[in-house]
Image (cartoon, rainbow, N blue to C red; front, side, top):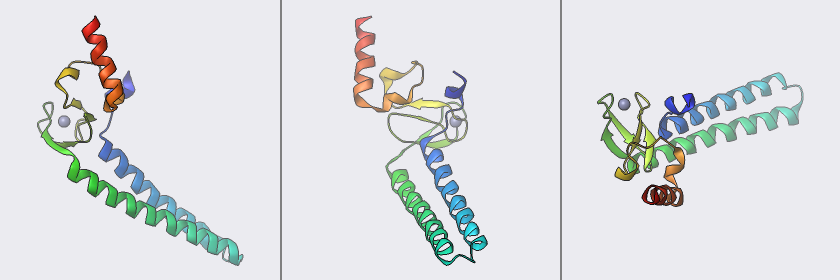
Length: 129
Ligand SMILES: [Zn+2]
């Protein structure tokens, strides 16, 4: 239950991932400095580090694209503007779980609601109760 309360928004999650990729890239390249006596190892580590950093750039670009598709809303809990990806997401500021689907309001938060099939199944269950 506790981990649901600290649910962070998807955009924040991807951002953290991209940032850690940059750090990993630098650590790998730093390792390459220690291996400078071994040519092939230094080269391999540098290339791996570069790939990691380039990958994080790609992820940042991807976040940019996702952000343009995200729905801007004002969080009902902290009243700050936030962006939502998919039907359910968390607030970027207070991590309040949010939903765009009126039928899901009041239900316990579940990231699986982003899948259409799961959502339909839950709605069906409610109807049959
Ligand atoms: Zn909020």
